[in-house]
Structure formats: C-alpha cells, structure tokens
Amino acid sequence: MKELVNKLKGDRVIWSFVALLALFSFMPVFSASSNLAYIGHGTGNTLGYLVKHLAHICIGFLIIYWVHRVPYHYFRAISKIALPVVWILLLYTLLKGTVIAGANASRWIQVPFIGITFQTSTLAAIVLFIYVARYLSKTKEENEPFQTSLIQLWIPVFITLVLILPANFSTTALIFVMVLMLTFIGKYPLKYIAFIIGSGIAMLAFFLLVAKAFPDSRFFSRVSTWESRITNFTTDKPDEDDYQIEKAKIAIASGKLGGLGPGKSVQKNFLPQSSSDFIYAIIVEEYGLVGGVSIVILYLLLLFRFVIASHKAPTIFGKLVVVGVGFPMIFQAMINMAVAVELLPVTGQTLPLISSGGSSIWMTCLGLGIIISVTRKEEEIAEDKLEREKRKEALQRLIDKEMAEEDLPADEIYEEEPMYSIEDNSRNPMNAVLNK
Image (cartoon, rainbow, N blue to C red; front, side, top):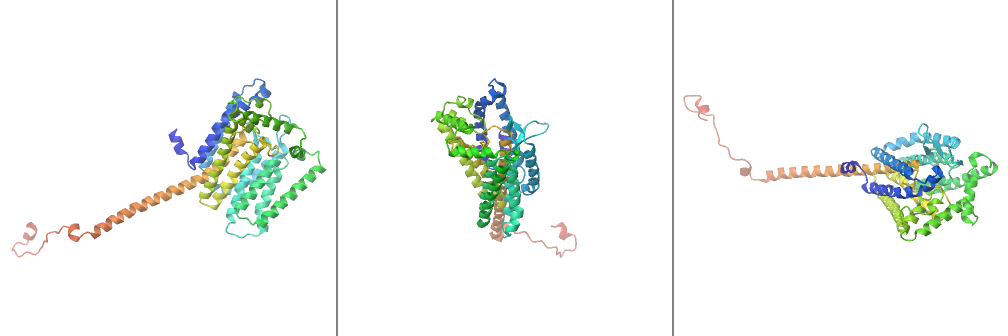
C-alpha cells in the first residue's frame, strides 16, 4: 500500500479529498438504490448496484492515475484535435440519443458491444474548457482583434453549446457561465465579454422562438419541460418536479441534526433519482445536518485546493486549465445541493464523485487527472529546484575547501623536499646515481 501511495504524484491533498468523497459515496448509493432495485427486479436487493458503483469508482481512479502521468501541456494539442470529434459525438447523440425507461434521453448514447450509456456533454465540457484555456494562454501576450477571437474562440464555443442545448439546458448554461468566468480570469476584454453575453441571450431567445414555431419537433421536445420547471419553481403549481422537491425536503427535514442513521432513509423509497440527482437529500436524511454540512465543507476545501494549484501552476495554460476544469465540478456540486433544498429549479445535475452513474464519475475523474497532472509538474519543478540547490551547496562546499587550503602557509601544505644534485666531481660517473 505504501509503494502504491508513493507512486501517486501531484497534489496529495487533492488525492485525499477525492478519496474521501469516493469512499463516502458507497453508503448513500447502497442505501438510495433500493428504489431502483424495486423498480428493476422487485426484490429490493441493492448489492448489485453497490458492486456496479464500486466498478465505476475503480475505473475512475484508474483514469485519474493514467491521465495524471501525461504531461499536461500535451492537452493543448489534444483539445484542438478532440473538439471536432466531440462535435460529431454530440450531433450523433442529438440524432440517435438513447431512450431510457421510455423517456426522451437524447443526451445519452449507448456504447456499442459494451451496453453502457455515455453522456457526451460531460466530455464536451472538459474538451471545450481546455480549448478555451489554450486560446487564452496563446493570446495572453498578443492583442488580437475581436474578429480573430470570434472565429478562433467563440464560434467553436457556440457550436458546442448549440449541439448540447436541445437536450440539456442546465449543462449548456453551466458551460457558458464557466467559459465566461474563464475568459474573465484570462483577462479577455470586458467589452467583448459583454457583447458575447448579449449575443448568447439573443441566440437563446431565437432558439425558443423556433421551438414555439415547431413544438412537435423532437429537437425541441425538452423546451416545454424547461418552461414547466421554471414556472413551477416560481409558482405553487403542482407537478412531477414539485413531487420530487417535496420528497427531498421531507427527507432533509427528517434528518434533523444527527440523521436517522446509515441505510435508514424512508424517502429513498419514494424519491425518484434518489441515487443520482437527489442523493444529497438522502445524505442529509441519514446523516443529518452534520453530514450535509461536512459534504459542503469537503467541496469547498477542494475548491480552495484548486485555487492553490492554479496559483502555483508554472504556466498560464496550467493556471487556466485548473480553473476551467476544476471550478465547474464545484459549481455542479453546489447546483445539485441547491436543487435539493429548492434554491434552484430541478436541473438534473449529479453530485460529483458521490452520485451513481458511470459517465459522470469517469468524466469527473478525467478532469481531476488533468488537474493533478498540472500539480505533478509543479512537484517536478520543485524537486528539480531542490536538486539544483543541493548541487550548488555541494559545489560551494568544495570551493570553500579549496580556498581554505590555498590560505594555509606554504610550509604546512608542502613538506620541504631534500635537494638533490646530479653534479658529481668523482671519477666514477655513476656515483651520482648510485649514491642517491
């Protein structure tokens, strides 16, 4: 075990927080999956879901390990190549999205020969954030005109968002806000950011108008769901989402300070998506306010560690990558928890590293691997600096020793040697040699 830990490079604190969140996730997922077990095979046995979650977590940590060993600057070129591939996947998802439990779930595709579903928008978000970080780091010292940035930066951003929007408004909004935050941190001109915000609002309004004109089109089938969620959030009109929120609030109220205990949740049997979208409500019900606040603190500490990693990153690209990939994880967690307490409308965002679901866990781990790769480079630079200092100290000690010897008196450094002469006055010419 010690040898395995020693092989882990990068920020050990980030590794620790990720491991804590992953370990904590097993009990809530094991408990909250009973609803899925009753619906799936009617037995209520959640052991299969626990084993499945364990497999997802193990694969996720393998992804972190493999990715964190890749030099992070390789992702500059990878993002440029991967972005068109992501567009193809998003378009395929939009056209051939899988139907799950009879519902329109066009944000998912089924991987051939494996049988698992994959949410392409999560991969698209990571690739897009790295692409934006690449562009901002490249133009940091250059004053490119707005027309150039519009072609090289914003058109790829809007293409990605347009392909995600019909199936997933909340993810589109989160990605757009995170890109704006990243450009602000990257010191992109504020007047251009304001123009982009206005353009984004105008494009969304145009999309909604087209959706109203063609309400029966499958590309706009989710628009009515968005409208109902926002309307029901601002009013008291009852619907399915209100049922979810009501059960979530009952679960949170039942938890009180210490909770009902692990596995003793009652609302998990009634709350849809209790192991994914609303798992935070089950956590508070079983572990109380103490457990709920502890989860919030863990995510905030992870955010603080991301800030430190960004500050220590050796390059501008590394700083922006940590911000662009790390901050959305924390915002996604806050959105999930805000939905559970009815601070936001129902969005469908999972709780990173805790909610069940393969693609969500794997893409989170992919992002964490990239961040740890940046901190690994910091560690290597620190080790090289320490090694240089040690060599410098050793060389200085050697120089000091030589200087000290030069300062000694000549009679202490060299013993006076007897003087020999080859001059000989004897008759035998070999006596000079034989006598010496």
